[in-house]
Image 1 (cartoon, rainbow, N blue to C red):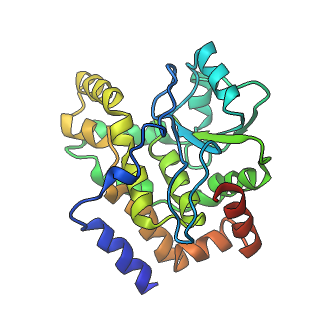
Image 2: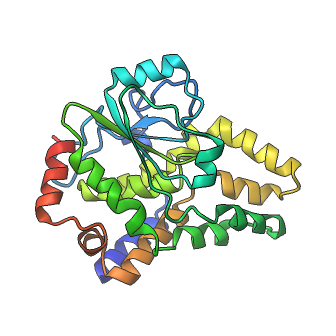
Length: 270
């Protein structure tokens, strides 16, 4: 437990991160109807392997995918889509799915986002609010255990896409847990998480402008639009505090035994 705490705290106060390993021109998926759409392939693991390209994708919401986008996703053999959004979000912006793709919605923890967001008008900074959101653990089993089960069931000939609305928070946590299970080092996991700031740069500028026009303070808007290392660390530290380690969390809450972890790594790394 102490070892994990020291590791994560050291990441928080690290002076800088080297993004050369994660910013790759092949990582971005060139769709017109979605943002933050990228391949999780290529990351090195502690076992000396790499996450396979073309097997796992992460994204923002996909309700506006064009017909050409759908054809591209079909060509990439995306046959499963996992949606972390709540029912209200889905009702307003239903996914456009690739041909013959299975759909799994996992809304746990997203039920009261509307009332949560109503607090922002009174804030001068949203950091504490975001860290509180990221630090919630009660919903993690219902949200991410079926995600891992879907990954284990995914045929080797096809790929899986998971997303939320912006593809940065709920999707960011899911990506972090998955990459950890695959053996990717924590510093690389954090770098992948922070890439949302790069992939959503233009979208974030629009989002911030819109929120300011609604009367939300600019700093609050910037906090809500971006991802920060402290946000993801709030999830890791909450998991460690409750379960002792991320490894124990994966075994108990995600119900991934040693054989499951071996199978995940066999399917998604080489």
